[in-house]
Length: 630
Figure 1 (tube, rainbow, N blue to C red):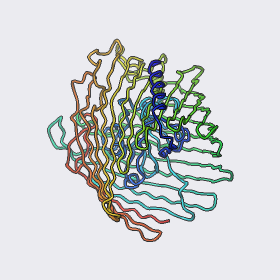
Figure 2 (figure 1 turned 45 degrees about the horizontal axis):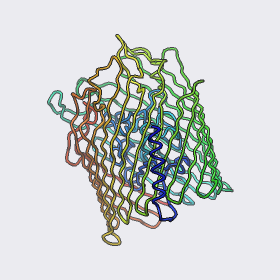
Figure 3 (figure 1 turned 120 degrees about the vertical axis):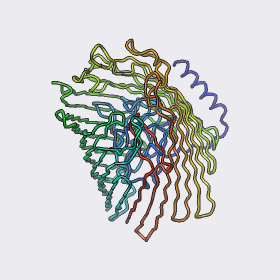
Figure 4 (figure 1 turned 180 degrees about the vertical axis):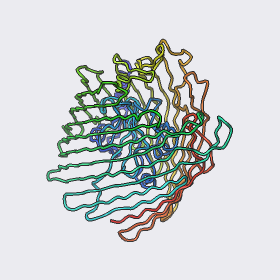
């Protein structure tokens, strides 16, 4: 690793010597609310989802959105079932989901179910690839997903929108947004309800007959309230509150058969207050947020299993603009986690996390941008691994640039890993944090209507925590080393046929080889050097859109390669490809607008599974209408 840093430094020197053009650099805007990411994202690969794409998918959830739009892998237990992200072959607990700068990962299991995040509650989505522990702390080994809402563009007076969607299998989604702006105050309230039976038919390959999905109903509702105060002297205060109730029925795997009876109720409260002072010489921010989650699992045979968790996050940092080409940031974070469940016995665990982070960014010779970051955390009276990172971005010409990122990351064990008891399993208090290094190199070309990006990456994670059998019980141990490497390619082309007629094409491809290079003594060595389960080596997507006056036609194609379902790769689920077609018509009527849309999902009626025994629906339809006024 020391030799690699030296190589990067020498390469940077060569780049600087090579550059003769002294044109000033203008960075592309990244719509992430956290200023640490906005100002210190040098060398990062960050993929944003367009606002129009979000607007056209108001009736969906984040799992559906990122399955189609993102370059990451969504591991899903079927429609309405648990869906979690995997970036570059890592696990769901290696990919934090950040809302307004708050990490929504559960302190109990380390993940977040993306089906519980409605698209209508989100204005901006960005996927950050690679390790980012120096900025985000524990858990950010594979990447991160940033979501937030935008209040700054609210018009003066009253505005709002009403969204209604109907779809196959009893789907109904209603969304209402109301906004108000007057003087220094801007406010917005969002609400939604969503019901679906999800009673689609499928061919059960385990008993060779047609069946109807049973016990897969979804009932969700929620509200979000947001306030923004634009204060004198470039100051602002933002307050947001998000409440949601989710009643989910859990179908059996197709291989089990029988009558499914399991249900799960999730109820959560999320709140954040954010103060920002943005001056020419620097930015000062304070953020405090609370994440409360209640879960009630029932199978109507055993007593209900109830779990509760609370996370309190406090963050303060200052960015100093020392010179036009030099910025320095210093920050402090305090996070408190607490959880309670019968599965922890008499334990009610909590955790105190303190972290100090610093960063410095320079623009050298108007060509080379350098970003150094470091983070040191102190968790429950113990120091955890020191996390440095180095990001480089070199502007070769107006069309070409390179990106380089080297970062160290870690993940502390979850409360389930430490304190679980009962049902033939027990936690392990001797676990140590997982540690990882990530390296990536990217090239970007942009000219006229064409944009292309190529990235190669290599990740290694040591002390990977896995649950392994010890006699008659299972317990977690630091038993594995994961290595993932691969390449990612994206292309985007835009062409104007006529002043009111345009075409756009986007293509993405990712090759990911993720293998276990070390396993514990009780694990089968046939798993060595084999692809990790539910990690496709090949993924690709194509999006084609035609926009003529008020009419838009969009075609989406997604290919997912074969995925192993056992550690020795002897069993797998087949590769599959899906196609969606959407037609959208929008009509403006002064300060009012109406849009109508219709979609055919999985239009070729492909039978496929994302998780073994969890069939996905065949061809189905959705129609939507949205009314907006300002």
